[in-house]
Length: 157
Image (cartoon, rainbow, N blue to C red; front, side, top):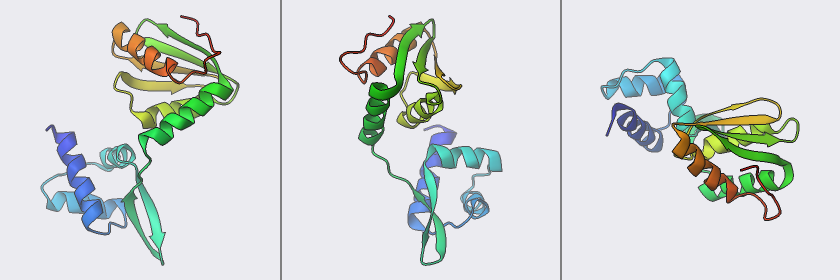
């Protein structure tokens, strides 16, 4: 287990076992357990772990937001049916063209799905560039995404 995985495991334990009300409180709890992190790193960790602040009778604290992978897949399929214009692998990337204004929504869904081949998504108004480690990863990512396209869609392969 690397440092990040160990830190994430500890954060999950702390959030599950105690009520953490602020990022600073979480940072202090990590430090008490021998892990010192910057605020920026902690913010990224919280995003990666899907931590959200919930309020129960005036007691706001962090919890792990549980969205099942199938829910993201359903959302992706819905967007693919309604807004996808083009899906094409290009070298170590996959280009996803959408209706105007929807590329960032695709990027958010893809980021949440955590497809192993995806290193990053860069999205504008109507184009989402999906960056992979290499050409093989891009082809595999393209094939994965093609499974969510409607039967009548013909991608530009």
